[in-house]
Length: 215
Image 1 (tube, rainbow, N blue to C red):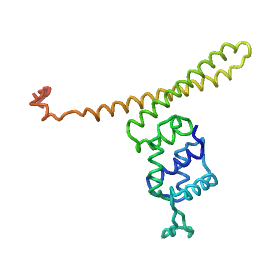
Image 2 (image 1 turned 120 degrees about the horizontal axis):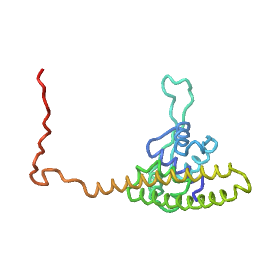
Image 3 (image 1 turned 135 degrees about the vertical axis):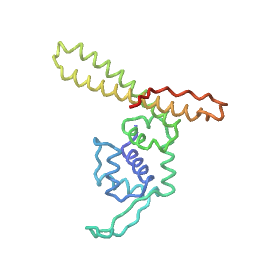
Image 4 (image 1 turned 120 degrees about the vertical axis):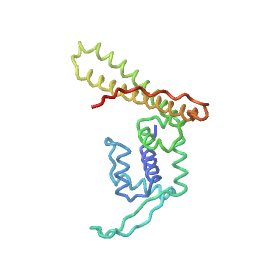
């Protein structure tokens, strides 16, 4: 399972791969990537940035206040170094089990446009397989709970487990739709339609006749 620090570093690398950012904007963007359930404080982000600066994957420089700005404080802007660019590419090329886990999948998915279709399919299929295993477990647990409900009379436990089953089912369907779309795109790119001129002379279809009424 990916550690939180690794997931955070990947999010920072991916965002700075798009453009340099100052700390406040970077924190907002990281929170957008991580999701509302994992909101990040600057106190959590700063140690990660410090570690990445020391490793040489990012660099910082101070910018002067913008003309007309209410604050005269200088701002620190972070940007990727060439080493950081290569590190991001290497991390995104990893399609092993860590890419399918809950903590890492969302961040990987946010930067899917930086990966090739083969990597995307492997990650999506791996994630779907992992969730299907989870779905089988929670469905079995739901059946057991329903069998015991008459004895315990705890319908809330059943509702909670049913909610879990439905949530996993929705994500499995979503992943299947994404996988099918990726495969269609891959097929289209490998077998593009030939232009009409390359297929020989074509007989143009006669347009349908329309009734015209003269006023």
